[in-house]
Length: 252
Ligand SMILES: Nc1ncnc2c1ncn2[C@@H]1O[C@H](COP(=O)(O)OP(=O)(O)OP(=O)(O)O)[C@@H](O)[C@H]1O
Ligand SMILES: [Mg+2]
Image (tube, rainbow, N blue to C red; front, side, top):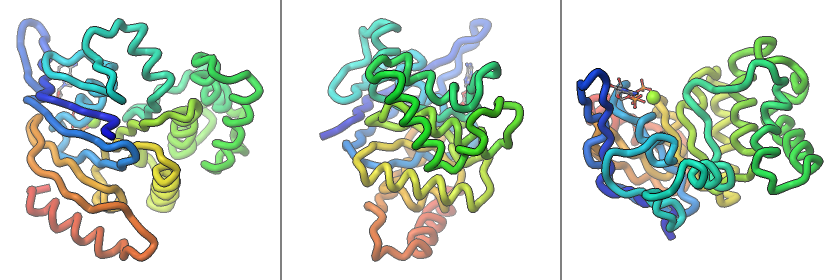
């Protein structure tokens, strides 16, 4: 079953009556349980694609269905509810609230969704912080922690409602390579547990552990690389080399 179906997605921005078409007819499917990377040069439309697929921004034309639900015709409230219950987000600039501790930031979408009791949400937040190795800064304010810790808190927050789809825009951008690898291994684990993941990354090594890479160029899908699920017997080096080779051919 497809968890995401995108057909002829077009996005045009208009500023001072100057129109810029950033997504020029994007079509692809994502199967439930798939782990997909979106790559492409800066400005190719990766973040815009994520915003439009998740209904956070309104596409100009085309069709997007999430778990068979057509986003067209949904009200802002309906879209917000769909996101809260089904999707997790890690933004390129993580929007954690300044006046809340890391822990409270992580719990917030859990309280908002009202699917679970306060205790259950708090317990889950605790577990996530442990898993991402930030439990020691649980009560810190966001200006008191490092960029990497902040990013890991943003990851915890995105997972608090146990989403079926995770959208992640450069989730390892502010992490050193050891932390980035750790985060990717957590993503791989979540994916094995059934979560569908769509991740934007500039890092070929990160992309090489996903199932498939979609390469965007000037708002269109230029090519896709099918890598298949990462298995125990896989040689990570070979996957990385294959990915790099393919990217170099694209002029990356
Ligand atoms: N609100 C907006 N109004 C006008 N143009 C926009 C808007 N948002 C994005 N753009 C333009 O759309 C293009 C794609 O932007 P987008 O942020 O999707 O790129 P990206 O692939 O995510 O880049 P990066 O790798 O740097 O994050 C850019 O040229 C950008 O200037
Ligand atoms: Mg971007």
